[in-house]
Length: 434
Length: 167
Image (cartoon, rainbow over all chains, first blue to last red; front, side):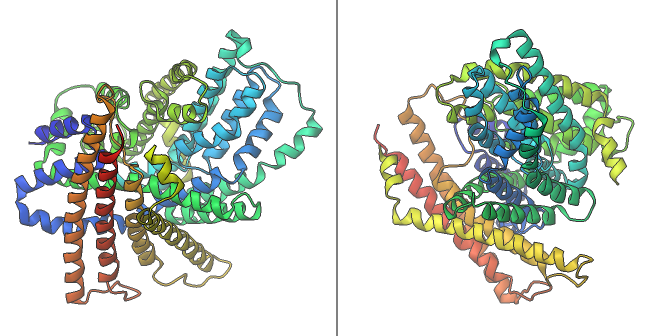
């Protein structure tokens, strides 16, 4: 029953049926078959309201709104100016500056697409002006954009937390070290790439220390917001909803004070938030109905028991699932992918024995999923971030951007392996800050 | 192209749907301001009890904002679908398929609107209120039922647009 459901749904999805609707339809039909029409009608009498009338869920539109304000606040340009004043004189230094600025921006924005779009506007023209290779520049920005979700706050982690009932604050803590590791790895990759192809990222004249002070001061507003929001959530001062509310509000105030947020810009930010959040909500609603059906079939628990009893080594199963995600991410939107698979995969993973408590495994797996999602957002053949850059840099062919992205994907795979091998990379901060 | 014309002069319907989305955004900003006030009141600086019922308000505002956003997303056709396997099809066929799915979405949303309306009526009949603020539950649920109907209308409009688009 569940297998039929999955196959029908995948077939419908291949035929352009929107993903949330596909889950809703198949889940609904399956529910009716197993439990009858009346219980289903009863179920959807309350569910569509109840699922959205959720205190924690408000974090999603609030972080999206915060990101939409941040995108228009001009803070990204300031971060980039500061970073390029410090490292611009190195070979490929402006690329590293993009990564550094994206890391800072990632701490005030929870969306990869918003980060990519922001830096495509704020940094790409600069890279091009200083004769950086177009494919390489676009690749750096597409990859830097993933830091929007890799560095907390992260909308993807919130979605993971909501669908697996995990603690958002713990996941945000667990994401920090792997996120910073990503930034470091990207910088090393840039150094290696520009050593092989010096013409890709020509070094700029060194900026005197005295002239670095002003641009560095420009980092303060972004840093302040990051410390308040992420720091507040880490320290337990705020619930995630409170942190996100404060973040959206402070970002709005900053934009209004700096006069970068005009009434038109606020309007655009709201409409963009409406579209992005509704897209996530539609999938969440579909996933809710589909999961209700899956739970009735009892397949997730059965699958978890079967795999736990099968004698496969836990790490074999885990690596298999992660590889499956990387492949699936090639044809499907990452958000939909995790919502679709977590009801089955999550019980499997948490039932395996990795020599640590199931709660820790749940957090660790969330970070692994996050890394895989990041890979999927840049990796061919889909790579949402690449499309975002390509849509804003129309003269650079997509294939060329992919060539610029591939070395970074390799760096990501190495990082994924590291976090798989050393769960402490994610769990250490959770323990330390608790 | 039809699309350019629409962007130059949005239809009255489009303007209504856009206003609903903007309303949802205003609701979201109001929510964040309420929470900020509540956090400030509760902090050691002030030390009072916070905004009464802030938890309920956040829940209600989130649901309402979600349903305010859904029509706009549908009208912009912002919902995610997989197009990897249908890229080879002629564009006219792709549009027809999309129009068909839009109609299916409209039917589903009509169903949801109907069930939410039934739910709102039941809440009205029993006089169900929220815990702290004693707001009647049928109000937000009924509003969501109406907005779900608007989503259905948007899906029909986008289906008609796709079907009419010049080949």
